[in-house]
Image 1 (cartoon, rainbow, N blue to C red):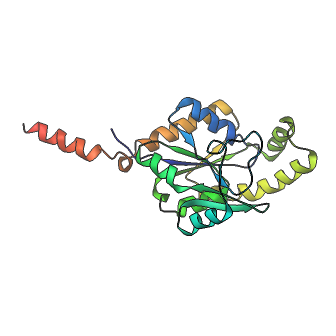
Image 2: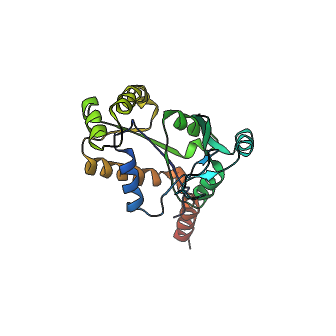
Image 3: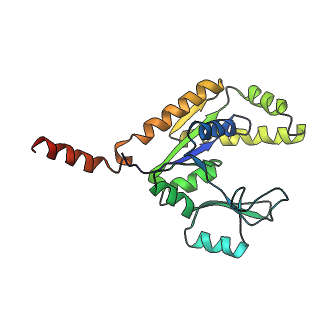
Length: 210
């Protein structure tokens, strides 16, 4: 049965497990793909254009924003970042789902875009703030000052939980992943997403009278 692809927004405070869950989703269904962001910053030595980011000039980025070709965008430390609409729309029409790893502000912009009706938004909560801090410390990527900054920011991010379609408390990674798969499986089966369903039912009814 043909269907329309989904735009899957995953948001969480840093350390809640969002990136791990997203990677497991890709392993579960290789037809899923991440939205590749565009940026005006220069590529780093190990980065490949089109794989890690779409590296574009600032004036081209601004033109895409003005024409509605960015689903969401923001300026970070003087560089622009955004999600190009074209590849996502093409995947959606082909029945393929796209994952967005964005914060609540990016999620708001995508939901407000022309593709908003195809969005499924999921917020990942930690079981507690002390547990969130413990995870940030254990992964060993940041110094104490950066961790303190992430913890301060996490309270603002968590305050937007009610804007999302689904909210998962990630107290057990395997259980959270199973719930994520259940959400995605159910959303794919929604009547309005199954574009071939009307034709199938007509054929079914015509066959009854043949």
